[in-house]
Amino acid sequence: MKTVLQIGYGMQGKSVLADLRKNMSISEIIVVDAADSIKDLKKNSLADPRITPIQMDIVADKASLSELMRRSDVVIELMPENLTKYLLRMAVENETNLVSTMYFYNGGEQDEKKRLAEKEEITSLDAQARAKGITVIKEMGMEPGLDFILAYKAVNELNEVRAFHSYGAGFPEPQAADNALRYKFTWSIIGLIHSCYAPCVIIENGRPVTIPADSLFIPSNTHLLKLPEFEEPLECSPCGESDTIAKLFGLEKVNTMGRYITRWPGHNAFWNVMAKTGFLSTQPIKIGNIEISPDIFCIELLSQQEQFYYKKDERDVALLRVDVRGYKNGKPQKVVIQILDYRDINTGFTAMQRTVGFTASIGAQLILDGTLSAKKGIISPSDVPFDRFMDELKKRGIVYTMKLEDWDGNERP
Image 1 (cartoon, rainbow, N blue to C red):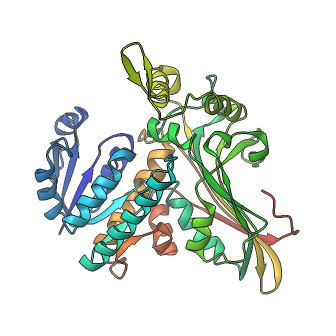
Image 2: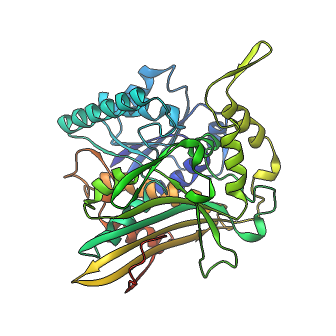
């Protein structure tokens, strides 16, 4: 019988808990959050004696957090990005397995020295986790997370990869895209804003090319993706560090590579203006006697408007698509793996909650049942067994399609 410590009971936390409850080999699920919403968990109709809700400030009450971690077999952290490294340090210190849906580094950090120091710290924590024999799965959500699992499968379908393009995003289905942004929130608004202002790396002509934070949405860096499931094409803007992913997957001969976020037409033009005019900056400005950073102002402005949230009968879409081109047995081939998921109106869980929450929950359960017992230190979603993971995802109503076809030699997305 196992104990799971879930830190965070927000949008994704609710779907994680619902999924964990179905595993009867888990004897206790401790759910920690500082928000008052944790009180609702005590009152609602779940009536599951295995659930222990605790309202707690995990930073202020570090001693209690340590105690909870030490008595748990695995921790699932679903907190904002500013707490991710803190919880990683705590898990390593207390020798507890950890599953995180977040990046362990701040992609929006503009200071190169700080970026280097951050990577060095994570390398050190990886070494400590290995020495202590614990497993830490990083980025085990939708994107990042599920996209890595699909990508690893696609890459291994070919003998040589020349072009790699992956897409990941959540957005309203067409009839729900009824505001000026044609977008509604299903995840951390802080994460959304910072993803719109983080430098990224693509690979062109076999070399990494850095795209500055304020240039993600200029037309020369974007493209359209036409899918048969939608009448309109999707706008695609770059994100992440393709050179890091290329090393992870051993893509030594990749010539063209990019990771992209997709939205409905018009979205990129808006964020391009916001980035170019300083609205996404993290540097505080003074207004009278008050200091506030533009990004926090934008977060507060958007998050307090009802038009940016889904109604009960509206659905979001989660899209994950990996398009890999190269050679298989000397023949030019193209592999496309895709997941397209929609909100479940019956449970109320959005597609984002399903693809993020279920992915994190499955990751934790694979640690609990020993599937990942040989993997120690900080590991990637690509280390998770593909068939086993997809079987679990299928049980939850999320399926993938894979198509292998001849490749015409075009490397462009």
